[in-house]
Length: 208
Image (tube, rainbow, N blue to C red):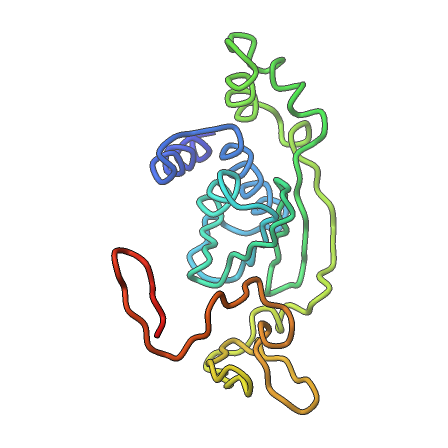
């Protein structure tokens, strides 16, 4: 419990408040460490975590595991779910943890003094035993872990847009080396033609 509260204090400081989903995230991370027999928060990069939402729960998970996007140990697959997959990259053991369906309703039983449902979840999620709060599934990644992590120093140039691609994320189509955007997987479209020159006028980017 002492470690839980230390981590909750830390995530509250980073997030500027503490909410039930942060508590869930911290509890998920701690349970992953227990099941995988890893000392968390980690000081190396052995654990890879894939979260299925951004926001509060992900902050809690990151604090509990010390997995971060910038360290390439945290990835976001935004399914809109408070769920996460934890991968021991040394053993290959992979588990997915989600809140139990009954957890929200059960929270009030563990926080009878709560003034509302939000407070009941905030307190109850801290006090509930892990088996009542969280469900664990053994899973297998569709993409091999070595391909997810990739190899350091790997670079390629997109034959279409000319931009650099790192971490072996290039795609080969019809003999061309393409970035995922040019291969048809872009999350954006160009609003105006880009000539490589731009100006900033009153906060707006104006392309020549």
